[in-house]
Image 1 (cartoon, rainbow, N blue to C red):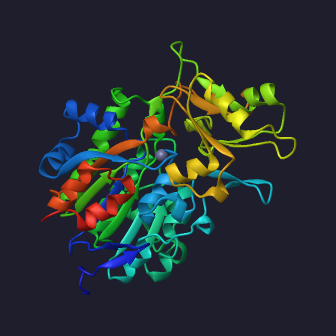
Image 2: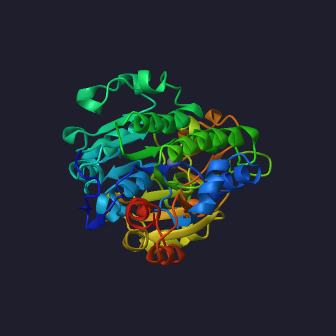
Image 3: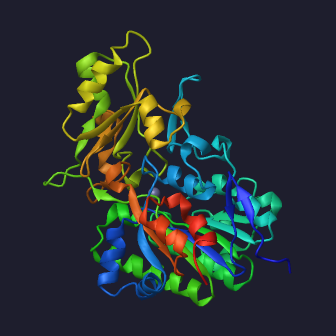
Length: 417
Ligand SMILES: [Zn+2]
């Protein structure tokens, strides 16, 4: 057996994992309120022990507070300015096309996984949504690692996923629109670990339940209790566990329950004329979650006869519900985003407000039980938990401005024992 204490360096960051198993969890959409609600009711006894015996705090996620952006940051350890994925979606100005970024071809940085595998670890990455698998699997399968999704568990094959018997190992493929799609991801981690087939894992769930249920609703509490059971099993197997989230989640509706939307393309068109292009980087194939409505937008000015940028920015800043408007250069600097995959300016909205294109573009009938979503500043802070106590330097770092994409740093380098 090769030594398991080998260090490795990726994107200028060094990792020295312990010899034993290491498991990083990204609990999609887990605002700290979800953990609080479940912990207060005694529904997460394993997490409670973990928090007391190890560390529980908050970390700053990456803006915009969307899934692909943050998962890609966590697995590369760097911001989108470096890794190149600023949303689920961007407008390719040169090609005149709106492009979905669910493929590794958009990555400008390596993930830490191939390096960990080459250093002698048995790496496995499990995600709920298959859309993330290609990014997570980049360069990993070729060096002997494993990467699959619960959404397409049955389709995993050794040549393409590094594993072919997922359903035998974990159970039948779950419905992606279910809590089980996420519990399955953690259970897969438990089974891979128990079978000795992996010792360095990244497990990333989906936020279907958080989009649908508020923290104190029974369905959410049952869901977190089910996750807790699997966290307990990981700890039982001797894993060092680190937990964070990609973003939080807030209700985005008016008092009467209707979605609280600012339709940017509509209002810009009414004020300045046609041609504005509003890109909503939350857009993905899973529209039932959020109707493509989030609290962040990239806006491209009309290609010809554009009004002055300053005038447009001033107008948007005055719109009720809008909290932040930044020109491209300022947004790229402050939010650490790649300028060539941005609009001319970005817009963020309030805790209970989302941004849309036009009323016709969004199918609000998909939103069965009110609108809960994310994307802005109010979903930026996320939980950070480690199962072992922090070493002094990392305890100090946790008091500063820790990022959710420092998860592997904290997990590999930051804890004692
Ligand atoms: Zn997410």
